[in-house]
Structure formats: structure tokens, C-alpha cells
Image (cartoon, rainbow, N blue to C red; front, side, top):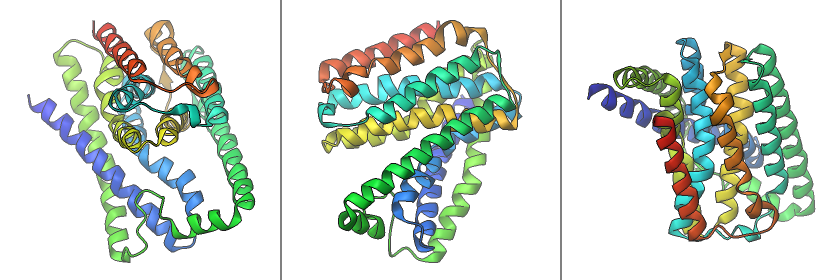
Length: 321
């Protein structure tokens, strides 16, 4: 029972530390004059994915690469099927009004590149650098597009970027000491939480006779998808379908390019043959399921929500069995 408690404690510490790091980094950046638009595209994206990154890095350093790869692949599958499915059951996601085509194409290209590199048998230093180079191209395009958008809507964009009201964790009145406390808590809590979760998830795996890979695909992946699920549920209830869909697409793209890219630079990640035969194709298939919502302006109805959630439960059952 104790490994389950410690794993849950590790996950809780990761989520709280990630939130603290985002708040501290956002407010520090805004205080030193970095525009909020840039902060939202970089620091917030990196900060909210910090738990997945720390888990993957720790898993590789602890010689548990299956946990690292399972975390990312399982998280991406959960993001599409569960993180879009459950909110759609609660409230129809009116994705027909969203324009996420370019970002979605980037995500698909990243997924195909990721699968191609996986078939080489191992994510090496070169593989990591390739993924990070593609990420740099995606971020550059985002910066250029943001610049064009700001020039077209100068007054409105200037007000938004200077006030930072729409940036998660932004507080113009936050004192310096509080910013420092958030940063310290985040930087200390993330490695501590990652250590607790990785070590105890591996103990659970051994107790039940399942591999680190399976634990990464299920328990760890589901846990690290909780922030995205919470964000998407709130977006659905507030009728902000663009936030919900954009959150999932952006998170998946970042998981593939940044997390595995950085982790592979730190140490090699061998690819379990089961990934090549099943899990990677499930991840790609789940990504293709949202084509109607991105390109044909279909809404994600409650029926679709039930179908997506049901598919995820079937996937978990198959993996565990």
C-alpha cells in the first residue's frame, strides 16, 4: 500500500510544483519586461510540461527508459481520447468555430517524425537534436505569426500583452519575495516529486508483474495528463472550445518534440518492440480521430465524448491485459 501512497504523493508534489514554477516564471518574466505573449508561448508551455519532462529525465537516469517513453506515448493518447472525451460529455465542445489547422498539421508531422525515429530502435543524441530542431522551427513560426497578429490588431494586442490579464498565473501586484518563493518551491518540488513517482511506480510494476513501460503508459501517463484534463474541463464549461482543443494539440506536440528531444540528449532511450507494434499506432490513430473537428468544423458532441472516453478505457484494458 505504501508505494501507492508515495506514488500519489509524488504526483501531487509534481502538480503543485509545476503550478508554482509557472506562476513564479510568468511573473518574473513580466516584471523584467518580457511581453506576456512571449511568456505564454514559451515559459508557460515549458512549465506546464515540467512534470512529464522531469519524469522522463529521471526515468532515463535511473535506467528505466520504458517508463520515459511510455509516459509520453501514453500521455498523448490520453490527451486525445480522455482529455477531449470527458469534457465533451459534460458540455459539447463547439470546435466548429476553431481554427487550429496549422498547429494540428505540426502535431501530425511531429507524430510521424517521432514514429520514424522510433523505428531506428533507439532515441539517440542525434534523434533528440532532430526533434528539438523541429520544435525550434515550430516556435519560430509561432513567434512570427504572433508578431503579424499583433501588427494587425496593434491596440488590442498591446493592451493584452502589457496587462497580462489572460496569462495563467499572472498577478501584476505579486511581490518579489513571493515570486522567489514560487520559483524555489517549483525547482525543489519537481525533482523530488519525479523521484517519488518514478521509484514507486517501478515498485508497483514489479509487485503486479507488469513492466515499467506498461506503468508509464497507464498510471504515470494518466497522472501527468491531469493538468490538461482540468484545463480542458474548465474550458468546456466556459464554452471555450478553442482553448480546449488548442491545449490538447499543443501539449501533444510539446511532449513529442521537447520532452523526448531533451531526454534523448541526456541519455539514449531504447524503444520496446511492443511500442512499434501497437502503442505508437494507437497514438497516431487517436490523433487522426480529431481530423473532422479540425478540418471539417465538426463539434465534439456528447456522443463523441462517450466514444472517445470508451476507446481510452478499451486501450487501457488491452495494455494491462
